[in-house]
Length: 409
Image (cartoon, rainbow, N blue to C red):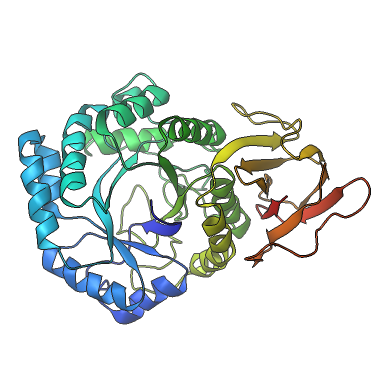
């Protein structure tokens, strides 16, 4: 990845994607990277429109899907050359959208597609989004999620690791009947979503992705829940902040929301409360996400070229995580229900792990520290005045539900 980007999964329908006012709304909401998946000529017109608003794009093209669906490994190189040549001159293409949630059996053809695009468009990325850790072995094509990640990185040689994890369940009156007429892939997705409480494993999932990304020296990104559908409830602003800030604490180099536009009618998923509805009307989540993107963008840009060196939980640790007992310049932290991400330049990103209540955290340090950001106020340069200049080097920060602060020593 070349920069910190904020994007989304599933955008405006064909009838809307070429309207300037629709693209203007996307830019105004703080997005920097837009997925487009129309026919080739429409994609080109949309690219020109996106460039007018300073937006980059990830392009899906049906020729990529044809190679992937047919497992045509031999034809991948010629396809990549043809697609690259066809879109030459569109400088705001960041990369090529390949597929969402592939089974491990598809990794060989994905490897061939990635090789082809690395050869003919070396300055662009390929986007492959993986299953989360609650996918079944049938979905993964592997015995477990970590094996799936390892196989993906070793076989495909991806530009980065992308995955989705939807944590907030408990929607009332959702349709839990699994329609056996749907295809097998959709049936498994629906079964894996069926529960009535917040799904466990969010932190185990992000811990595994962070660890594998660090091991192989590749960037990670996460697609977080936004749209209400199936058993997934309508998120509060605190829950949305929680998702975005956990991404930054764990060193994710890109954040994506699912979804920007409300998908079509479906009796099972019953989509509602996306950022925009089917007619393009902005919903409450549009304004929530706009505020969140404004708050996290500067912090994301600041942390983008820093290495995530460790992540700890403050207070009772979640499953699969490590409790904070001192790290770097911080001796201890008083408080409960927090997460602190540690970075190579000596900065720390501390997040309130509660998405319902405010929490206070008192940091005890060996040296003075500077508060770079909290509640959306970001100082782009070193602070002249430290936030801790008393004898015992303490600083207390109070964070609203799901909110965060970036601190530098």
